[in-house]
Image 1 (cartoon, rainbow, N blue to C red):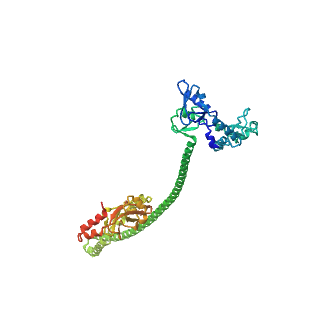
Image 2: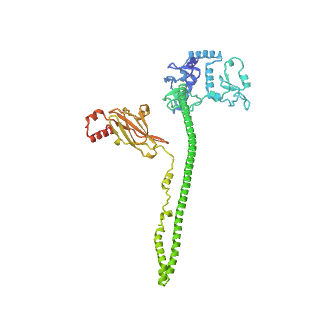
Image 3: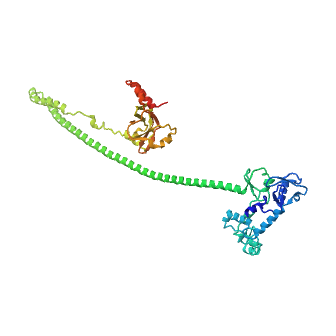
Length: 512
């Protein structure tokens, strides 16, 4: 029935044909729709001459009119009879194709979701009108309970009318054309990307534009929107996951920060405790050294005082004897005093200690400049800078290669790790590096060189050096080194050390 109804639908008004005209191109058109085409052509034309031709809205065939105008076209009586029988068949049951189409449109419309919108009765004469309880899809009118009983008695033809929950009146009226009054939009202009009516395509500015049916455009746009919506939902899901990861990282940053701050306080407290303990130890050493030096100096002072007292007594005796003028008495007493003075003079040279200025603590110094510099350089540990392989220093034999490298952060590196594999000619080194299964690893290297044994002769290898400490690790740039071939060694000079060294250097530098 729906297929038959589409064949009986006018391409202009999209309703069943009413008083259809049979056009020379064998298509049909409502008389009133053809009249609207002529009226629109007259209003859009600058001349006042009568319109003598128009285009068929279906095939674009030019229909010529005689002096009688539309009356000169034949009526499609057969089509009208088919429409009449179709309408009678539709009235025999409640499932009219046109009404079913309207009801499906209504049910699929977003208007159905607006349950809280107040819809007034369109048949009430009182002011304000009562609220509608039903909407007749056939009449396209909303009724209150009283008006519904008055206008839709339980008898034919009203028994075939479809009643649904109230819907806004604008839903049935549909969208109207902006250029042609009271004309419903029924096609889509692809060139201007807008809704148009049939008159816009026939006589309006869209006559030469590509148009599409609303259903085709609806399906295409709906599919595009669903695809984009799916992508957007997927993207939102990815963003939510990304945001969750970022939030988790932020939380981890907070936790790590608190942990590092606590570690910093702990380490600084330990340093301060070490400084406090060393301060006490050095202070005790200073006090002990002071007591020892003062005790030694006090003993020397006592010795000097004792010698001074004895010397003072001898000086007084000698001065008293020197005042004696009697030669006999002087000789009798001076001989003994003279011996004692001579002995005291000789002994004083021995008893008087040498003064050592080191005992005055002047040679004692506190120099913490090195420690201060270390304390000023306190900072959190970072991963070491990438080491650099010195290819010009590397050497090779037929089965060994000695790799040399340097590192700017040598003192912060706890160990090195040497990685190597056979070079397969891959241009993309990243893909080669990702296949770590084929790499040999030599861990825990403490020096900045290493000799790899058991290699294949005449084979090119890729080497990497990783510098490691507690904060992380970084890799050097890859270096390609080659072992010597056995034939080259056998063909070379047996006693030419310089030539052998040049051969090893060539193998280390690689070909080309």
